Each structure stands twice: as structure tokens, then as C-alpha cells.
Image (cartoon, chains in turn blue, red):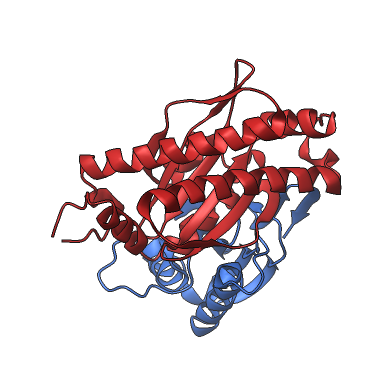
Length: 148
Length: 209
């Protein structure tokens, strides 16, 4: 998880089935980006909270409010959740989809609005987030850059 | 005591895995050599247990575009085998089989991709058949899947699959040397932890019992 205030660019590279979540409080220009890999933190006492959608988003929100963000002002932009390899019926291909569902349901429970999203599909994404204006940009292979 | 995590492996166990990597890669190199009609040698195989970021740096940056052939193992051993075919390797294969080269992956036509998948699949299958013969295990392989994209995302596939068990990825692999040129085709074997344990016990090197 990375956080910046006022100015700065947050970047997370090569999101495949992982999801990048940009959380932003526009009033104080505080932005955070968390890169999650799996939908749910199933194990107790796991130190790596940022790897999972549920604990990662909640921990990031906590750290943002500790830095002065108002929970009610925070909005989200998300990208990722692709299916890199088409493996037929295998559970592996579904990790991206499960991540998308988990991220959305956690954000819904936390009452965070998703402003823009670019999820699913089969392409990897690099996500850039400009903290000064809350604009996101997605870089992919074989696809023009997408502003979110 | 059975291992629960990759970082619990003893040096004897790591040596055994390196030997598996050596035998598997050697067989894969032979298969490649027969397909290309050229001499292929392998560099010293490595067993590495890496965090995700370290693995990405090792293979050359997250946004680098690469081709990957992925096969899943089932049966007595579960895991993922990934052949990472960087552009030099892809061109070596295309040159020998189809007598052409490409500037970048976007120029690949269906026939080219198909050749790459097949070469990847044969190398992976040879690797696994050597492993299954050595350990006397029944291993089934799925149909290969192919993707061309950022290698960070391709490498994240085995990470995400086993991310719930461990924060590390284990790779066994080596580079291939063809016509005095070292070509980075990496075969990465990422077994799940339970299967790894079973494999080491089968080979009689598990630290416990």
C-alpha cells in the first residue's frame, strides 16, 4: 500500500488477476493505492493484510482516516481482475473474477463509491494514479492508454 | 515433521529439488534440441524461493512483454508449470521451425503462437515425465494455455494460485544455450506445498519421519 498527499503519482505495475484500488479524499488530496492479490483473508494471524481484498481495503481506509481523511468523502477507482490464461473450467481462471466481486462487496459494505472501473477481460494493466487531481491512467499491452 | 512453508526446506531438500530441476531441464533441452535440430545446452539449474517482487526483478521487470505457456499439474502432484518465452527464445524457435523472426510479439500470427505453445508444451511435458519417472508418481497435465502480456501479470498467476499457502514462490529452472547464445527460456515449476512435501518424502529426503 502506498499513500501520498497533495502531489505525486502512485503506480502499481502489471495487475493480472490482482486488483489495484485507488482510494482518494479529494478535499485534502490524500490518495492511497492498494494492490490486492486474493479475495479473502482466510487465515487468522496473517501478517500480510495488504494481500487480501477485505483486510487490505479496510486497513488502508483506517490509515487514511488516521491521516485526516473523512471516510464519507473517500471514493474509489479500481482496475485489474483479468483472466491471464484461459484454462477452461479450472478454478484458477476465476481468481480475477472472485477478486472483483470481493473488492466490490467490501467497498459496498464500507459505503465507498466506485467512480470508475476497468476490470475483467484478459489484459494485464499498469495503474497510475495522480494524487493532485484524482485522475487514473491504465497502461496495457496492445491497447491505448485509458484514463479513468 | 512435514514442511508447511517453502522457507522450511533444508539444504538437502533444496539440493534434491535442484537435481530435479537439472534432470527435468536436461530432458526439456533434449526435446528442444530435437525440435530445432540444433545443439542445446542448459546452464546450471537454480532453485529459488522468492517473494513476488524479487521474482519479478529476477525475470526482468514487471512491464516487460513476454509469452508464457502454462500447464497445470494434477494427480499425485499439484502445481503449475510455466514456460516463460522471452522474445529471443521465441525468435529462436520461429527461426528454426518456420524460418521467420518477429520484431515484437504483436507480429505473431496464429501459426507462430501455435508453434510456441507446442514447443512450450513439449518441454514442460518432458520435464514432468522425467520428474514422474524419478519419483514414481502419476502426474496428469492440463492442456496448455498461452498468453502474451506483461510478465509481472503472468508470474502472478502461480503466486495467486498458491498465495493463500505461502508468500513465496518456488521456481526451479535454468537458461538454455543454443549456438553459443544464452537464451532465457525459463521453466518454472511451482508445486503446491503439500505436493512438494509428498514429493520429498517419495524421494526419501524429507527431514522428518
